Image 1 (tube, rainbow, N blue to C red):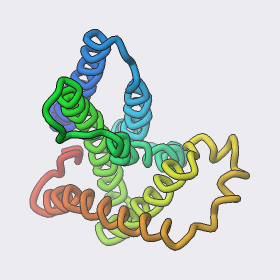
Image 2: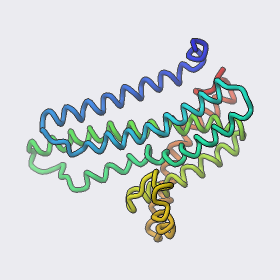
Image 3: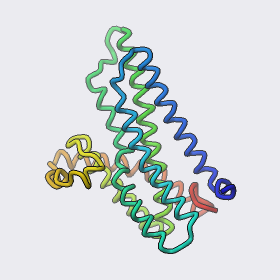
Image 4: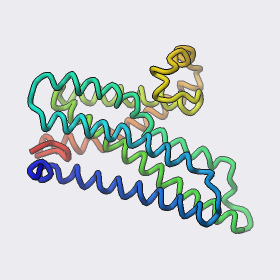
Length: 236
């Protein structure tokens, strides 16, 4: 275990930082509840919990691949990978939580309520930043696993496909109000919404460009690292 931790210091540091950021976000929410006595934004905790699930699953896959040597482990990794793919959209989905500010006024004649709106904006931003960070790190871990088994080119294709499917899932989640577990609990609802209107496809494509660009910039660092030295998550 000591050797594993020494070879994966960056992975451990990122986990600790993400955990501390989550604690900080929840502490801000508790502070808001203590001051105002209102818990309107408790759904942020649930959304953040859902964002942790794909990150945790990617860690399980990585640990299983690193610690075990038998060949049949790939079947377990694929099995967990399916659930990772189903839950992964919950992380970048938090980007759409900014929609809750569409009804707020940030620039009237300076009142306490406006100050609270800006504080709420900072509160939301910490949760959303946390969700995006969890998604980026989770996808980066999976990218390195794809590089190991499929090569760099196919890993990039895989990232493009994953982010595109994620954009569709976010559309379903935000506009149709479907959840990851509807894949097995309410699959009929998914089939009923397979036909997406043109304006929906515009949202999906633009979001895909944003997500793919954002994750590709981070993932490119890992690909370069693999070429010139050990990757951020690569076991030395």
